[in-house]
Amino acid sequence: MESTRETGAGTATVAELVAARWGDFRPGLWCEDAVLTHHEVAAGAAARAALLADLLPPDGPPHLGLLLDNTPEFPLWLSAAALAGAAVAGINSTRRGPELARDVLHTECRLLITEHAHLPLLRGLDLPGVRLLVTGTPEYDALLAPYADARPDPSRATPADRFLLYFTSGSTGAPKAAICTQGRLTAAGRSLAGQFAVGPDDVHYVCMPMFHGNAVIADWAPALTADAGVALRRRFSASGFLADVRRYRATYFTYVGRAIQYVLATEPGPDDRDHVLRLGFGTEAGAVDAAAFERRFGVRLVEGYGSSEGGAAVQWSPGTPPGAVGRAGAGLVVLDPKTGEECPRAVFDAVGRLLNGDAAIGELVNRGPNPFEGYWRNPAAEAERRREDGAYWTGDLFCRDREGFLYFAGRTDDRLRVDGENLAAAMIENILARYEGADAVAVYAVPDPVTGDQVMATLAGTFDPAGFAAFLLAQPDLGTKMAPRFVRVVERMPVTATNKIHRALLRREGPRCADPVWWRPPGEPGYRRLTAREAAEVAKAAEIGPAGRAGGTARAVDAADAEGAGEAGVTGEAEGPLVFTRGPSSVRRQGLEPRTR
Image 1 (cartoon, rainbow, N blue to C red):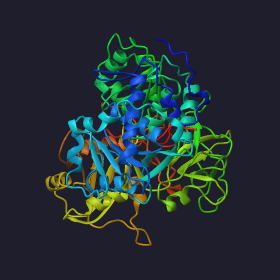
Image 2 (cartoon, rainbow, N blue to C red):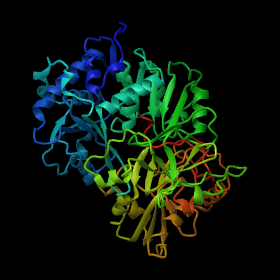
Image 3 (cartoon, rainbow, N blue to C red):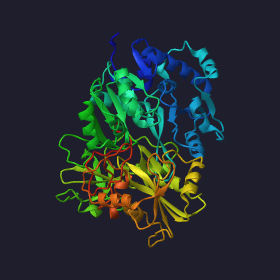
Image 4 (cartoon, one colour):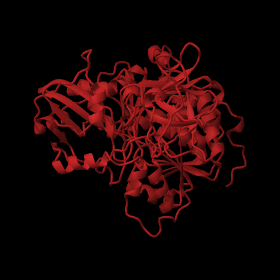
């Protein structure tokens, strides 16, 4: 049946949007062979909300953690939390050991909902005061059974209720939990639904992990506000992408990192345009891959810069020059972090090389209104972002040209972005420091050939490649994306005049250095020496101009090293040979999340 109800134009809470689905018997949620109507989703959310009311202790914050793949349980629990006035912390399933436990405990989750596949991640973890619910078990079904007749009641929720606690990495090493209220998420969903003309007949394909803000804010929320359907993929699959799009008749999807490149690496077919998909919205596809995706599938990709916390956003628009993110909107300025003064405008030469990087590169700051709502129990990080005058400091380096266009230049703190994930170098260093042969360790970003960064480590001491690979496998808190791609072995760690590790030098040299470099090629479990041929490819690639693909943290390091900073580029299936480019990128670069305001 066709829905004749209004979409979420007048609603202020996620709970109201969930309750509005009651009585809508159109199919609304797909996952593999399961199909739920909008009404069934609302009913399932109401049952879980009633269970929450009985299970959440009254003496603490009403927080629950979701350690789940993209199954129907994830949006059902999101919807239930909205009805109950509770907040959801998406727990990253690539985290391990104490770091995973830290995420659960830091966000003060009183309940942790997971599934059988993730139980091995929790073995041996000390999670005091946390009750575990395992979906798909008889015990779980028995818990829900008494609440089967519950109806959704949005009256307990307010726009100011905390709703999401989603993690973003920071300079302190441990991820920070950014707060998103029901009001902010509703506004974000409404904004995106309006921008992309989402309606009740659309189907949003959610193939990115829902423990990230991208999938919830940019995919699930606009579908919810527009009464659109949602189709879930348990975990992203490039080979299954087109089949899913056809199966669910998906019209919209979001992506992060190298997802687009992975899809393009699949075998082309004569029926690649046989679908109804019309739009992709996400981060870091790169101009080259975005154009290739549209040529092959007939689907437009839309990108733009936005901080994870929602404090600043830049949208690409027609006429934006190559390498630029977009034009600076009202309130956005590039400031010298030391003086607080506005930086001079960027000057480029005829081939696009930045000539005055030392002066022109500064931190992007939003002096205008912004929806940043802080971090959970992290006042120091919050003060770093929101200053006394109310301005939001993004932590990202930019320069601005004379026409007002902004160019991304790196991050102010030592972060890496690997396959769509922000990682903190300090965390990886702490793990690698346990290696018996390590006297000193430095971890930093080098450009990924497709998008973002790869992890490189410099190790002072002795190095056995087989022993190091075995050491990594034995570390319980080494996440799946933390293992170094490259290991440079030195007799003595290079230091600055103040005896600090000379990270800028290490980043600038990357794998192209006089010291032995061991690397772990994609798909290989162990490390081997970087050969002369491979080193020559890197050296040759360094001469290539600014025609590369999307870059990450490694593209620029700080103002002193901004000119000539390395950038990622080229081809290959998942990860091809290293290619560096110089000068501003030819892609529209953005942060972890698209614009959410």
